[in-house]
Structure formats: structure tokens, C-alpha cells
Length: 210
Image (tube, rainbow, N blue to C red; front, side, top):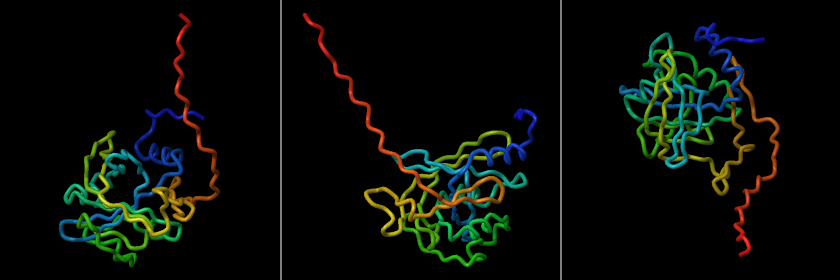
């Protein structure tokens, strides 16, 4: 089977790509409108951008040609919180993707508890084991659909006690959720550990005989 990209509209191309690029980590994001409404939505086009400073990026698309609450709130306030949820929260993650009017808080609808953030005004969810307070860094638009790759600088990590040792997250204890194609999600499953790859030894310079 061959599929030529020029034959695809945006929607079938999206379906194809989200079924191919799997599994994808989920950024569960809280933002706050200028009216003080706390919005919550999941985004699976999510990755690390830099470690110094720590930057993470999320691709935020449009809905029916209009900016989503998350993208609009981030640009208005310059702040957001990214959470990493576990397998016990799959239903809430999925339901938080429903498009509600801007004055409706998904946090309230789903009965989720909030905690105050320390470096920004946007609150964080209490339940997830990891929350990252972020300030807007920049956004870049790609393609013809209006999607923007939005980058934020992490200003504070919140990590559940016992989950991190020597800056290494105990992934099996985190039990992260990933997104597959369509309304499908995956769990961590089997973890296969390989030996650490040894660093390439430095080349030894030798002198030719005189």
C-alpha cells in the first residue's frame, strides 16, 4: 500500500500520523483564563525541547478554525502547568478532551482537586504524581492548519515523594498513560532493560619512530 501525501486532506492525514507515531506521552495541561476559569485538556503531541533551561513543547491545534482554550489562555497569561497522569486517570483524561465553552471548567466538571502553584498563578491538579509549572517561552506555527508548537520553560517540578532517585524517575511506579490512534490509550506494559552503552574510548595518539 502506498499513500501519497498530496492526495490527503488534513483530517485523514492526522488520523494516519496519529496511528503511526505511537505511543505518545500525554501532557495534561491546566491553564487559566483572564476571568479566572481553570481549563484542563490533554495533548499528546508533546516532547522535550531543551534541558538547559528545561523546556517542553506541545503542539496545539485549532478546533473548527478557532484557537483552543489552552492555546488562548497560555498566550494571554503566559503560564500553564503540565501534568503526567497515571493509568487510574484514563477516563478523566479522555473526558477532559471534550470541547466546552471557555467559561466552563473541566476541572470542576470532573470533580478534580486543585493545589496552588508556587511560581505561577495557574493552579495544578492534586492527583497526578508529576506536575511542571511552566512559563510561556515561544510558539511557532507550522503547516496550513494553524497548529502552533508551543514551548514553555519549566519553573518548578512537583514530583511525588519516593518516585525520583538521583534525578531518575521510577517509571514503573509512575505508571504513565500513552495515546495511540483514535480513542485508544496504552499503558506501560513490559519494561525491557538493556546494559548501559559504554562511552567510546578516546583515541590514543602515538608518535611515529624518529
